[in-house]
Length: 237
Image 1 (cartoon, rainbow, N blue to C red):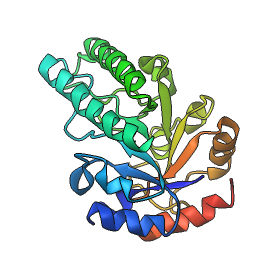
Image 2 (cartoon, rainbow, N blue to C red; image 1 turned 90 degrees about the vertical axis):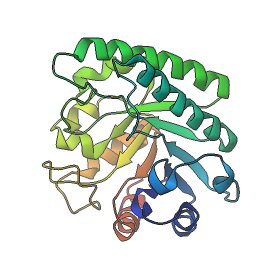
Image 3 (cartoon, rainbow, N blue to C red; image 1 turned 180 degrees about the horizontal axis):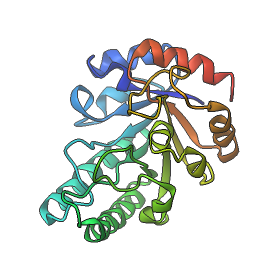
Image 4 (cartoon, rainbow, N blue to C red; image 1 turned 90 degrees about the horizontal axis):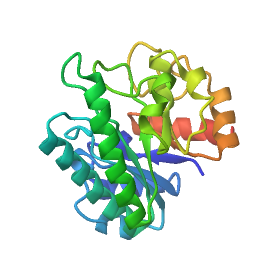
């Protein structure tokens, strides 16, 4: 089933966002940030929806060369795993970034350590998680298909808008994904537009979603755009 991320209602309290999205679809991804940051599963337990969680990313860095920060980042995401286990939710994780040029290789080593710890935690909690490709943001890891090996045997979330911004969507579509983030842009900015307002051809994207049997989530920045995208893409599944 096609889901919608709470990103489109991030300015609203989480219970309000859940109620509004549940009126459209029974599949919701919670953006575990800002007003929607989860300290426990209670806001989700009153709904019968299928959930996924986008783990906290703004204040975390799984690739940090500062070991206390790397460890704390992994701990924050592990806490997200614990909440996910209560509602049987899949979790999406960002791969982290380098702080300064020239730190690529040691940061990749740190990312590998973090993912090993998270994989062990995911097994302990009985949940699944996947790592998302990043947009055209300086210093971030995992932006192109050539970097797919950085996440090892972890699951993969294909963020279609990020891949389009980096001009490598076709390459990423060759890699089966467990999870998809669907939004549009004109390739110059990570604008999270409604489908059809940018330049992405969603025909091949939805074909890949169906072939891989991955879980698709609309990650559009505004509610009306998310609903319009849902109605459009639902007919392509």
